Image 1 (spheres, rainbow, N blue to C red):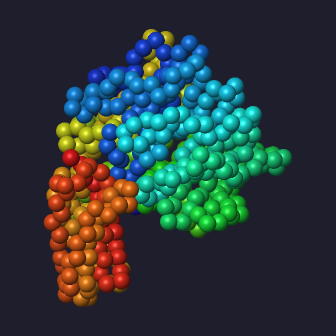
Image 2 (cartoon, rainbow, N blue to C red; image 1 turned 180 degrees about the vertical axis):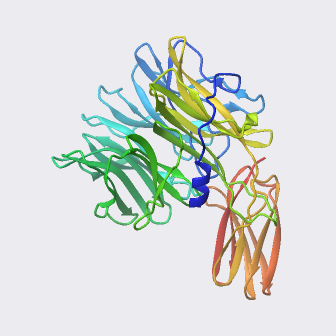
Image 3 (cartoon, helix red, strand yellow; image 1 turned 90 degrees about the vertical axis):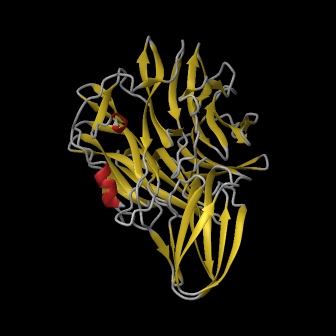
Length: 484
């Protein structure tokens, strides 16, 4: 996986891409559109909206736009908040709703709007103290094909320089200070990762009184307290830290550091592990990098001649050089096999990247950014269509081997292969995104050998599913996606 990651981010300097029909203006009006956000995970649920802040007449409200797959265009802008206050920093998870920061009570508070069964609920305030609560963030989910704990909401935010983990359940909020600023250390940047099976990990950039920075973490088991602080990266000039999904269950913690006088990107691979390895992202443009965004789509077909694991990547970043800012675009849709930079009129633009739906039976991924037009900030975007790739991949234990289904995504048929290393009683089960069992089949006693299941998804709705094979007391599971 590391080698693939190096290859995909290793590009020679090439063209600077100018404005044309490939780049689309997404928002229009006498207002400023800022801070776009697109929900993202390893499979990329379809139809995710672009959330953003709409600033007008001294107020800011949370809006979103959805991509209309039938007409191949963005739908009308929809408002989620409607007031004369500042509502900023939106983030979204389809099993939770929208989280944001608001000054409706005269100081900064954290609020969210629940989302369930395609309906929006009423705004709920998670914090109401006299202090300012800022920078709300949802925990990233390590196994995002499992929903987060739907009976509770877990977020991170900052209050007086302290990093707080808030759990909201049964209309009650419980807080834990994860990192506390004091005379020795301060904390500004942070991110959280939730492991469905074990608990929470919070990462932060810590700075001491001498200006030396380090990346630290604390781990909290589900049934325990936060453990002692650990240092992951010492004596760095770290900033712009964030988590990104890079494999079925693997995440990387990305950050910039100063190298030869320029801001360059580095990554800690599997940052929850003991002593995670350090990677360098060899993006061969001179200048300062920031705002890296990654989208990973695991699309799988069967090709006996191809055995390399080939996920499809789309990514973006900002590059600043010679007093000009550029956004990195993927122009493979235009049949250019090169990396491309698009110059911006503003010096600090916010970026987002993610899947907005499907087009031409392919996954439609958009890079979205802010830029200036007619005296206002508006959102612009550039699409890329994710193609199918190939894999022959397996997971195994002492009793049997389970292969990835192919094709994946599928509609509505796919094949699932497994190999028994010894005779066993075999069962086949499928679970939906909520963990509900939708299919169970007893395959009976089978001798050692290779087997194939022809899976029919006609009776299932689009979405992510977990399929599981049990052989005696052993079980292996994989995920697949049905796209109708």
